[in-house]
Every structure is written in structure tokens, then in C-alpha cells.
Amino acid sequence: MCPGCYKPDHDTYCPNCCKLLFDGKKVSHILSFDTPADDNLSIFQEKTKRLSISGVQLKYSLRLEGNELVLTNKGGQYILKPIPPGIQIAEASQAPENEHLTMQIASRAFRLDTASNALIYFKDGSPAYITRRFDVKEDGSKYPQEDMAQLSGRSKQTVGENFKYEGTYEEIGGLISKYVTATIPDLENLFKVVVFNYVMSNGDAHLKNFSLVQGPMGDYHLSRAYDLMSTVLHMPNESDTALDLYKGDMNVDNEFYAIHGCYGQPHFRELGRRLGLMPVRIERILTNVFVISDEVRSMISDSFLSEKAKKKYLEAYNKKLKMMGLTKTIIFPYQGDEKDVCLTFIRGENITGRFQSMDKSGVLEKDNKYLFIETDKIEQYKKTHDPQLLTLVDGDMLVNIELQ
Ligand SMILES: [Zn+2]
Image (cartoon, rainbow, N blue to C red; front, side):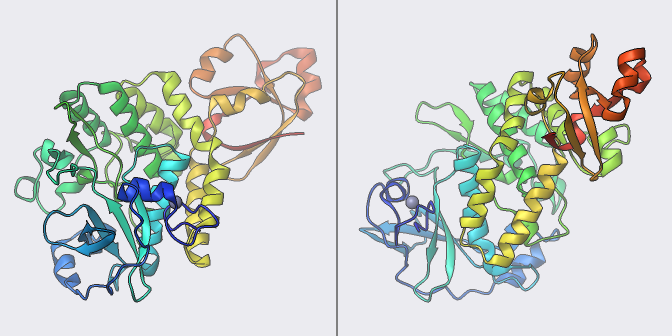
């Protein structure tokens, strides 16, 4: 299997990965040196009050010399992240593959624009994550890049130790609107990444993990996605997202949050609306999350994670997918008058019956709500048309529909 893209029948990087990572040069997936000895972990942890995976990961800079990757102090073209020497994080040995798998799911299943990446091995056999820097030009100079902490004027000096975790994703949207010329595509990309991070349990997507990069024409745009991983594997008690989606998103008047204590589809629809995206685009992006779920599951199962880590990774994914409910587009094909369906809700309860179409259905469906009549009430409803016999079904709370 290719250690870059999981393509079968390859024992090293496939031609496509060589092209993406090394401009077509054949580079070995085994480095010519051992894991660098470095234990500045305690310094890192002292400096990081909020213990996060990014705070314990060590990063090395690599440069391509001929066909060989070498450690370098300047002119780095690649970033190498070995197994973090963390004693305080779970499943530390799985961190490189976690990041690689999550980045691959982002680019191949979610079709996000991501930094090129692969798994690579030290001479001693231990794995590392490698990614190509997208801010380095062919001549070695750099494209100007500013992250969202810098752009929002947040630093340790201005807001303190946890400055990276202050702010909301809506605010990042505001910064994109302010500095990017082609605003809408980048706002849509931001929205996709935020949805991705939630569904894949990346709780460490802080302000410094979003950047604007200057392109060759001098205009700024949102950079490719980077540093994506399912952090819950290493930090089981971490919050679901590094930043709030928008101010007030956990208010008690938010029905979904009040019931479940976490974000669901209504929060993401609201974020999309606040970012100024068209409802039809928001619907399409959210629907895609469910359409690709089989592909995501098979990528997890094909990955280089240990069996135990695969199980945890998959459990976290399934749990989040459940919290997202189902979208109008997914529910629509089950709405024929003659179709008996069984609905399963987030908390596991089932009801069987038929969706009912009425005058006010269109209005309700805008909020992902539907009228439904349970099987044992159908006869009575046909006679009386008593609206009290109907059940209001919330698509945000549905996890499955099955034709009977
Ligand atoms: Zn490949």
C-alpha cells in the first residue's frame, strides 16, 4: 500500500504521491536517519496551560537534497512530525497516522484543499507524518502568510496564554470578508473545514490553524487546510471544537444544545447563514457529510492505525455523524404517500409510519421539520383528518430512515 494515499500494490510512494510531494522525484518512504533525540517536552508543557496535541507535538524541518530528505535549519520545504514523546496523551504512537489518515479523508472524501502529506518512516522503523509546506515557492522564498491570531490582533501579550483559543469561527469568516477579494469561495471553504473538524472530532482547530496566504497575483486567499487530526483519540476529554462556532451558540434557548449539550445540524446551518452562504450550498455541504460516510469508514479500516485505534477513531466518527441528524435532501426520497418507513432518532427510539404532505409542509421543511403519521393512527386519520394525530418529526434528530 502507498504510504501516501493507501493505493494498493505499491511498496513505496506511488507516482501520483511523488508528484504531489516531491515534484515527481522518486523519494524513499524510509528516511536515512533515526528519530531525532529530543526531549524538550517538559518545556512545551510548561508553556501550554491548555494541554493540546499541538502543544506536545515536535516539528522538524526537512529539505530535499537530490532524492534524499535531510534535516535542515533553513530553507525547509517539509515539516516532519514524529510520534510525540507524550506521557500525558493517549495512543501517542498513533499520532502520525492519525494526522495522515485525517488529512487523506479531508482531501479524498470531503474534497477539501489540503496540504500534501504522507506517512514516512525513520531508519529505526518508527513512523512520522510528513507534509509539504505550501508557503514556499520553487526558488525557496516564501509567500507571505498570516494566521487568524495575527489578523485578529491576538497574542500572548494581548489576551494571554490561551490566545489561540479565543474567538469564533464566525469571526474568522469576518476576517476573510475583510482581507480576501474572492470572498464567497473562501467562506464556503472555511465552512467545509469547520464541519469537517466537528464530524472528525478535531478539537484543536484554533486561530493559528487558519491562515491567509498571498498568491502569485498578490491577492490573499484562505490557505489549504493543515494540522487536521482526530484529536479525541489522544485527548478524550477535550472540548468538541477549539473555538465556538458563533457567539451565543450554546444558549439555553437553542433547543438542540439544551437537549444534547453539543452542536448539531441547526448550529451549522446557522453558522452557514451568518457566513452569508446560500441555503442551497449549506444544504449541499451538510448532505455531503452523509453521502460520503461509507467511503470514510472504508478509509479508516484501510489505514495504518492499530486495530484498537481504528475502533476508537470509528466510534468517535459514528457518534458525531449521529449528532448531525439527517438533511432535507436525504429525507426527501422517503416522502411518497404510499411509503411506510421506520425512523430512528438520536436517542435510539423508533417510530413507523408515513410522511404526510400538507400546505404548511414547505414552511416546516425549511427548518428540517416534517409531518408524520404513525401506522396505528393512519386509519383514524383518513376518516377524521384530525391534525392532533400527526407527529412533528425533526430531521436534525433523525439518524436513520428505512423503507418498510
Ligand atoms: Zn500514493
